[in-house]
Length: 222
Image (tube, rainbow, N blue to C red; front, top):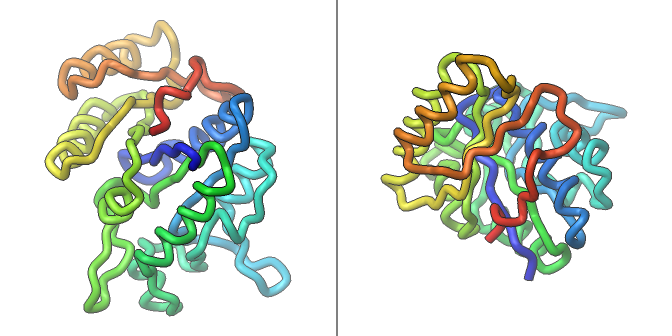
């Protein structure tokens, strides 16, 4: 069975997909590597078919051999939270189907990098049946890595995300500070304060436009 990690963002547009691609790329050195995102909204139609943009980016950037159908079971056009996109478009997220899709990848690949939607407080379904991102992480039984922009606001965003996850018994193996500028006073201080406030001492600093991760990420996968 393959090992996996779940990439959680402190919010939207902090670099989850970028970091996921670097993780998937790095794990190719240690066996077969796959990517998974349960629900993806804000996608574009090509020849009448919705193409999961994040999956396409990871596939190209990481150079992984995997069909996009395997990568993302729920794809929506509207750039809304998945629960709202599903209300409008249909095809509501089903936890059992998500778990089955992930387990299939786990049997097929040595390492699976799973990416969340939005931030940790992300509703995937709210139509009489409630489903949240935390439910997916718990169902898959994966350790997590928190991704945040390294700049102003990172301390608050990471500390709140880590505390919310800790309260729900979700394991965080590391924090990734994206767009980290070495020597920058804010970035450097953010790293120090985040370690102090969260108690998480595994902090990976990813510089802007990095093509590879600064450290071997195998320790992230459980």
